[in-house]
Image (cartoon, rainbow, N blue to C red; front, top):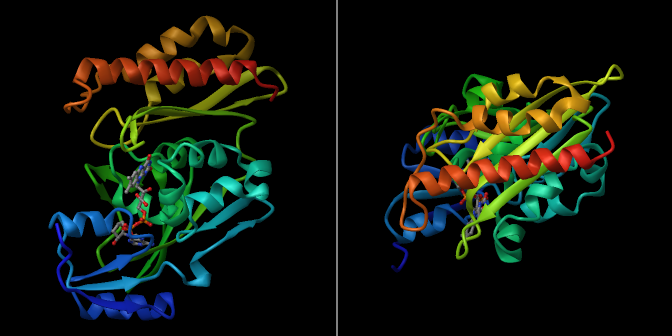
Length: 286
Ligand SMILES: Cc1cc2nc3c(=O)[nH]c(=O)nc-3n(C[C@H](O)[C@H](O)[C@H](O)COP(=O)(O)OP(=O)(O)OC[C@H]3O[C@@H](n4cnc5c(N)ncnc54)[C@H](O)[C@@H]3O)c2cc1C
């Protein structure tokens, strides 16, 4: 479908974007445009004004601090994939970024756009959940931080208000020493039909604890807490617990269904992706 006529403003600062949002209820933030513009073409979204924040330097880039890494919301998937700093301190980012769609989408799409849009098949939500990320948003009341556990509230729905801007994603350091991301890609879009992010820490005493983020399987990405509970324990025994972790992680889940994958198939893909991710971390040196 042909796009309709729409007003466009390239914001000069986050502050300006916020004041425009406050004055225009039908304005929407534009970052990479790789979700919003297709939705506008299909008339699934019909904002009257686009406020482009995609090139604001204050929203781009990766900064490594002593106890956290901070990622600007307008940082592209490709920048996250290529970052040497992230490969060193939080390698799960480049693992996930490298399997998002194709180079065109990776060069324009942003982590902030993906998190706020919260597509049930998007990759970043699983990573944010597995790495205990906190999303910093700013609105009329000033900045606030939302833990990943409270960020994804339902189908394509997050805790970000329409007049707020997601500015940065903060990930505590050090990140767990053993990580993996496994994804079954939809053959045409590249989105996750099912994917799992696993991040496991093994203490000096050999005690393992970790987090599991699952995406693609249900209407929103989720942390597989029952699986995490079974994962905790002696690392050397984990291989024997893998199947139980997988079963617990996806027990009771209501899978999405579409023309490509019915519920049972999608659930099974989720189990297989999680099992492969767990077997990956068993092979790694922590
Ligand atoms: C063919 C294709 C394949 C794709 N495959 C994948 C895939 O495999 N995995 C995957 O995860 N994604 C995939 N995507 C989605 C892609 O990653 C998008 O770029 C991403 O989801 C949205 O990011 P964006 O910067 O393009 O956001 P936009 O399209 O600009 O915005 C998306 C939504 O987020 C809001 N928004 C954006 N930034 C902010 C912000 N900072 N604060 C508040 N609101 C904001 C916008 O108002 C809009 O509602 C695919 C997209 C396409 C077109």
